Image (cartoon, rainbow, N blue to C red; front, side, top):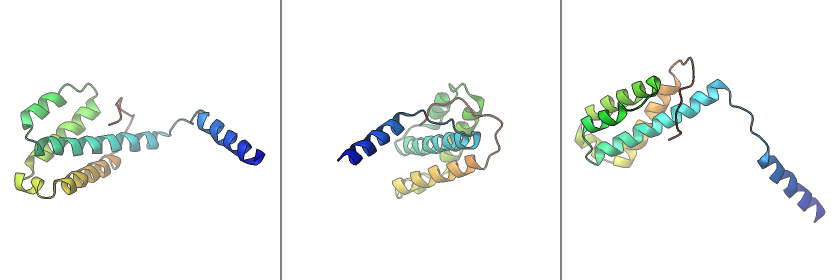
Length: 119
């Protein structure tokens, strides 16, 4: 019983320990995951009838130039897709665009990590 208590205490203390800062590559991976999630949401918005101009106006409010560039490119890409195509298996299409954009982002060279809120 004492061993179980000691083990539990160690596990709890380990959970409270400060996490080591992420390497730039790990930070970029997290950023790209958020960009991919944003792509999925942009496609969902289109599937729900949000007009391209409304999506662009919303994206124009972004302050970070890297994020704004990614999002505006995603909007352009998503709104070029045929409507019939995006509405056939909509969940599958959203997952596909999320994965494609995440991978494309991860393969993009970066100098610094943009300021962003995880999505």
